[in-house]
Length: 110
Image (cartoon, rainbow, N blue to C red; front, top):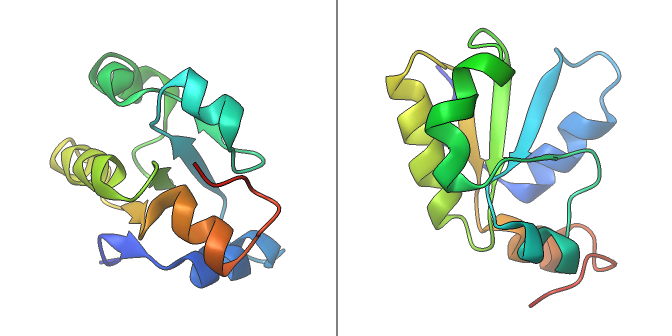
């Protein structure tokens, strides 16, 4: 089983790996936060909407990586998703803030 968290550098490598199994990045922050800083290609589903949207919008057999500001909300979402049968759910360790400081400084910090 995958660890609950994935480091920013590991996600960057995964995104560049053309042979990687398909995965989905969901940004669980509020829309205003996504306007400030976003991970290209992610799908915005605010944390509060996850319970009503997860089963209809995401494949429980696919790897899902949740992202938030600092990694707290996304870890809660990853745990919830795993409890719902999404066994490959993970959280981006440190959130978009860690992504900006360690992988892509072009992504705004707030």
